[in-house]
Image (cartoon, rainbow, N blue to C red; front, side, top):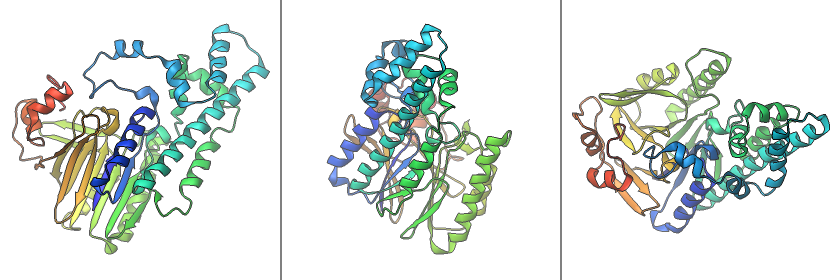
Length: 374
């Protein structure tokens, strides 16, 4: 089984580039596409690969008005919000009108998300896991809009609160949960696809470390998902577990430790069980794919399209293989795997060699010289 995995695409430009690439690359013969959250979020735009650029200079060079016009057809209405904010005026009727424009923007962005998922499903059966940018707790599209208009996010949220914009996620969820054989909503659920179980830890909140009501809710949703996984274990011997919430990165040896206690307990519980287990973590600081074995799981740490459109293909046959796909350069690399606690390295390039046979070439291509987390 061959599965494309795309995490943290964020921008319209990136996700559409990946879509066009996969649409043309019929020779890849994909069985599934998994989109592991965070398709929304133009404010997370990056230049090139990872963080190897001057963020302030890059941000100053962006034409945000042009970006807004590319993602929203009624952008003139949103410019009225910017003008009214800078005028310093207070007018209830005007503010109600502007709030309606914000609600329309939120609705348009979720409709775009749904439309793109449908387009991917025409290429192959597509599973979507909820990221924090799509979360009904955060509604980060309001952060996105505030960034595009260069006005305070609090102002946008204070205007929007008088509308029913929070109904937009419910509308999106009802559409994506509809009976569609080629598009599946995996956020907070576990679904059997033949002999493979695909389970998605939905990113309602960034953290599962219980410290407030939102993180407590996130961990409760994770526990509910894990109980669903347990009930279905007798029906499968393969698992792909998707995660979009936070965790801790260890440097030596390099490894990712999920923040969720429930996830860590599940990983330990599954030792000696199932034939193949894969843990996929989307995280936008990664400049390359990390592929290693730990606690009998194959960990794939990727940042996909936020990193100049790079994504991965997971191949599950007699063994597990992972490919690094760079659609901008049209390059496909088969990655080596390693056992994280046996890996021996002292320099970043040595760590990179654990996964990439042509590590020096990757550093040159992606301008990664001097970066530790490569």
